[in-house]
Amino acid sequence: MWIFPLTATFLGALFAGVVFSFYRRGRNPAFIVWSVALVLLALAPSCVFLGSIGGWTSLIAKTYYLSGSILPAGFLASGMLYVLIPRRMAHVWLGFILFVTLMSMIQITGAGTDTALLKVNDKPGWKAIDVPDMLTVVAGVTRTLSILLLVVVTIAGAAYDRLSWSSALVPLGTVMTGASSILILAGRYEFESIGVAAGIAVIFAGIVRTAQAEGRSTIT
Image (tube, rainbow, N blue to C red):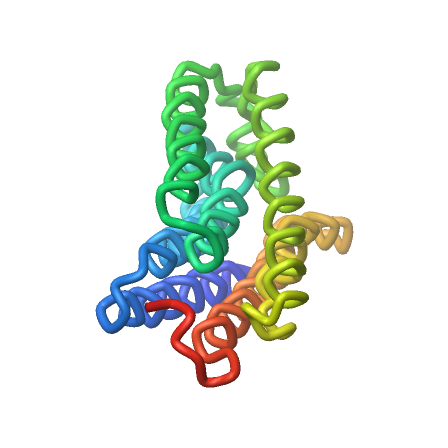
């Protein structure tokens, strides 16, 4: 079932490149952080791909946990803030996300791994990580705050005619990627990547519509 994570990886990397090219035209930091978010969303299924064809390692499992569980929503929210509020204020949220990123990397690097569980073929490698309780709390709080902020900011922007309502595709896609783990119940952990790929496509559509909203240069 490696085709599903490989597809999600390809879409995330492709769309990240396209979004970064928007930055080269408009020079708004929103496009940088959005491209980072898409790279992270591509990195998670790439770990699933590597794990499914060559076996999970501690490094692959920990990279998946960071890129798939904690960080993407924070960077997506940061991008929307750069679109709608003064950059100095948006810098504060980005600084918080970067701090969480650093702390999470330190925590996950020191986490133990059940090497025997890594070798179980039908189990995703991230299940073998002994995730510290503090990191579990940080991940949950950061992800929840990021999604709430993204939803509220997007709705406010659309309500005040700063954005098209189609910009809501960004938070919708973010929720889709987060909820994609339910597809594991279908029998294979690689199925999660189907939801991730769909979420990435929806996020990208929302970013494009945000950039093109009503033909106005709101992101320059």
